[in-house]
Length: 385
Picture 1 (tube, rainbow, N blue to C red):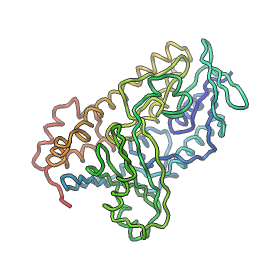
Picture 2: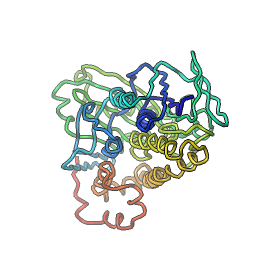
Picture 3: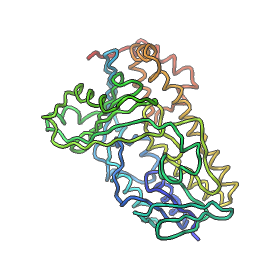
Picture 4: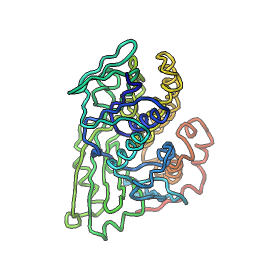
């Protein structure tokens, strides 16, 4: 019998497999796609996520960025934030995810790609997992195959998470266009309703996308076309273009951490940031916490469940705080405009602090001094465009 079966070789599952194998556990990872597999994602790994991993990711980083540009088009303001050290590392998710799973394999984890899980039986002493060609038993399963994967259907709470639409384009442009955007991470607000757009520069191309942060029946394609017009990227400037649509499982207060011997992790828990939709860092952390809970509880079911639930509280505290703050960023028009017009510079600084792991959402929400800092006259400095 195996110690743990991990379903899904994304960042959550790969991180869990690495920590488990490093502790001497017998680990088998099932991934339904052929590795390396394309993952629709902007590919911005924030410093917090990079710091969570016990190894350097430099070999798969395409660009390190220490500058963040935030535009708000309703009030026609631009806020530029710079740091001495990189705060965002640009990657291609196929390379990044495959790098982490290769680290797990180095530690002894067994990886089986093109192996879709078709059945799972959660029993008292073990879990039986069935693929097309075989069955395996394990003392625990870590379900990390996404918000719409097989294991997420084990419970209605997580399967019915709020999933918002996002659209991303990997676009290779003429060099003069690429030069305009290669040195900064760019976020644009006030273009699409209740959402934002972004430009993430990679090694030789741009990842340009847009996401709604609330449920809507509006077409995101129209808004992304408008964003290309704002960026002044015309058809004649584009050499190659690949468009990918996907759904982001936003954080919700409704949650189920586990089902018997199955622990949910990553997107299967719905851990995307309600402000930025960033989910890589919380996926990595939840995968690590799932593995840690199993190892430190010596595979005792009740202890594992209790420890995992307890350890996730810090993540949920952060995401609850982010959800509160998201009402100011994506709330009613008059609130959103007022916040960006009067406090946009300081808000941009605080968001960069969070990305750089210098502050947390919960510190901002629960510390009144954070709000007083917004009122400093010096933070009204901004630039119109």
